[in-house]
Amino acid sequence: MLYCFTAPAIIYILCQISDYSPRMRLWVILLNVFMLAAGGLGTVPWISWPHKVFWYVMSCVPFPSILCHMWRMVSSAVDETVEPASKRSVKFIRIFS
Image (cartoon, rainbow, N blue to C red; front, side, top):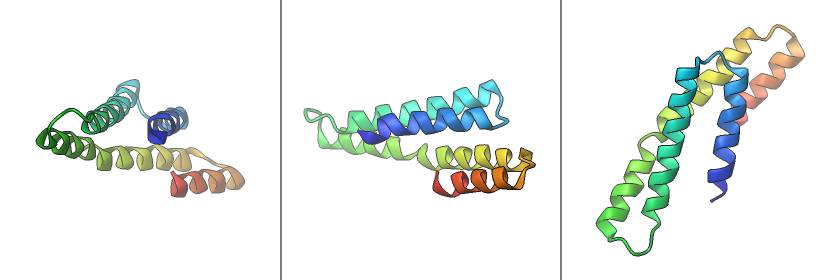
């Protein structure tokens, strides 16, 4: 449940500091929405186990892509940052996001 609130906020903040186009931003947000919705469907108690497994697997599929996009967003911000202190701060964000 916590991921439903933190991931969109993190992705929104990373979109603000990245050089991603609006289309790429929308793609990352849609991947995240799909992952959260599929994970939510996998936890519904009244659906059958095969459906739960299906939705759980479907929620795991976009996760590596989302992580890759998050890394690229912060890496582009690191490349654009000139000031050493700011660059160090953005690198810290890259490691812990």
